[in-house]
Length: 258
Ligand code: PGA
Image (cartoon, rainbow, N blue to C red; front, top):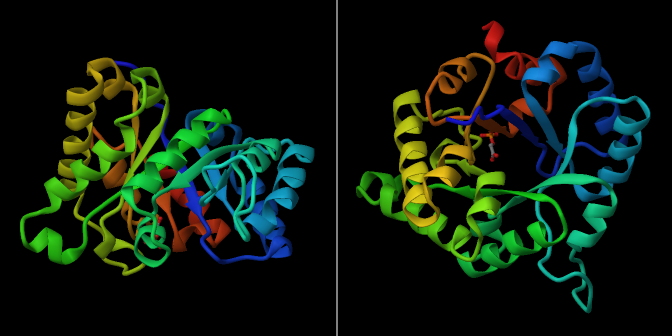
């Protein structure tokens, strides 16, 4: 089985201006050791208006944290008022782009078709998508979680080649756990990440399934990250609220010490 390096990603959502972003990263770089960033990949996903500042800071201070974005458009350029091109993100050395976050799906109309286009665009411009999926509480209670999650995966990866899938990241984020403080139990999170890996195997083969990194997201904090990361199919975490505080985010990255 290939070794999957854990990926811990901080999704800042619509928080932290570019001054606050620099202050947080300045604290974070002192809290993280060389061993931390050698054994765990770390990305931060600031608002678009912070990215240039974050890039300049991380590169000039040689901080081994990857730059991420929270979304992008699927076209390279054109008459799309208010949208951000994947080409612009690639130019700022963005490595990872979150695609299909449930807040985008629920509040901004990102459908499976749009998600599929965005995943393709992120790959086309040399970046790695973090494809999000997850069910609502009503769907879980109705016993529909498996179908919802595997349906989102189907749409998101159908058009991709197996080696692209092998290199990407999938984030399982049950909607009822996002920002609620209510984390999925490690067993439930593992079960869903297992469904996802099995779906990838069925669609794109065992090699892609063994290599793809699957993150859990939804109220991850330093007190629950170690148990989640101990699960065989969980390779990382997509962290919202707890990534806005340097000490807490550092403790999450240092989950092996917990
Ligand atoms: P949360 O958000 O950690 O604040 O629950 C996770 C996410 O939406 O990615």
